[in-house]
Image (tube, rainbow, N blue to C red; front, side, top):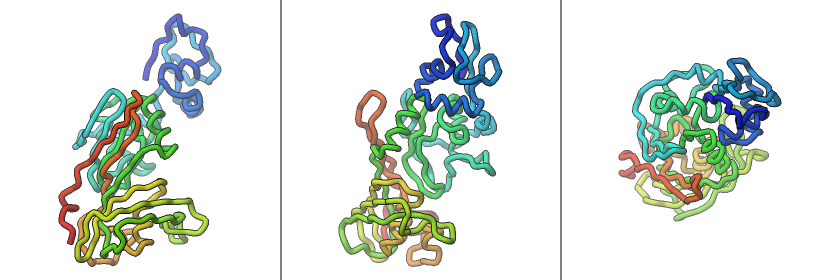
Length: 288
């Protein structure tokens, strides 16, 4: 983003100037400056440097320049000046990695709105939270730095309401329940229920039973990596199509991981409670 310093802002410290213009905290600005991503007149500048009237102040994460804009299907469920709500398909990676800069949701997002390049973390601009590549469903992407900080804060404080729908192997007996089991990496590098792991809490409720599988509504109090997948396996009912945690179970065949982010609710920047839903994909509607 680019700003021309006006006389009213002259002599302000760079970190204060950017915090005001970007609508984020000074600590967030400090990270931008530390990564040499803030320039005055095209030269990297320190936090304490004072701006002068007429200075051109720019912020652009260096690594975000490497992310190309790639037009592609982007199912937008809702949009306002602060954020986008996206319906992510299964099989689409959310953001770039050190080895991969293309073919991601972020590349499509940048083609849709190039200004998002300046929002959030450099390698995943706009991304407030993520879904695994094989998980489908509702996601939020921030459009401004202020919205990013605000929404990210709600995730960090576990104030987001998230609901998932999953199809698991076998017939679950109890109509509802809670799994409280710490999650961590095992010796093989996969996530598993583990003594000394991070606390993880998952609630489930039966939506429909079949002969070989059960459709569940899932809510979580924590957001550990692969938490739902690990907890379902721990319960004895791994997710249908989970080639990582139930690779050899062919009781029910599926072309994808049967886990879908159905709903997300939060407080918007105007203080209103909002909720957005992603329609259940057709493959979930027939429970074998």
